[in-house]
Image (cartoon, rainbow, N blue to C red; front, side):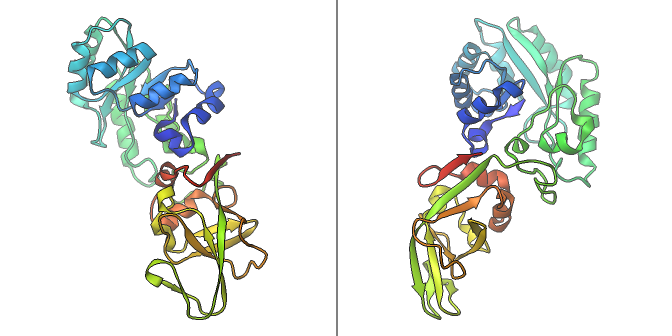
Length: 329
């Protein structure tokens, strides 16, 4: 079940679905709008709405689109029971095994399953849960969640889904009937200390911009808002057409790097709304119009995320389309 929520983690939902549709068994999205957009691609694969529904009119839309729905609270279940849908609808019941975000308490699962099965237009597709710390390989909590989920689901004989990307790659007991790969689909490691290359994952997207100006600085001249970077000698500074309005984090100012050909250049000064500066003193051949790679092959998005003090998920889903090009490899 390929997870394509968040505009396919910033990669473009329609492009991603068209590319991987022949190779997956189902898709998972987070919103009704994403489910509609996915069906507009023409894919006839099963679609699962992970965040469920919040209103009767949404339920009718999902029923018309033949989208399966996750139920994780009693308010949703009550709305389902009060509905009179024209077609059968698939329901996944989400179980809270310890993350305490979304899910029915383990003790309540038997009664909720009875209620779901008593709805004449409902097809119980299975049970699912979600890991809290599957990316922390030393933690015993993932094993605890797995065992708790298996014990809860043991008597129901329905499909089970538990493994996310980290579960698929490192927690084999969690694979069960359905796995839900997310970040790994896009060539990014779900682990802080294990690189995508070590996992044989290949980045799907490279992000590029261009140099729009070159400034020649004398010693002791500064760059950008706050004048936080001061040249120690003569310097060539390239101004790159990308900023935090494009999703390139301001916090990347702290030690961020870009790739120009095979050469790395350091960010200097602060990232502003529309641009940031790089030191190209050691790249005399680089000038206005030069292509600059912000992340991708040769410069993993994990590297940028670390410099920005965040995680690759946030970087990818923050990238806009105002000035930069997304190049699909």
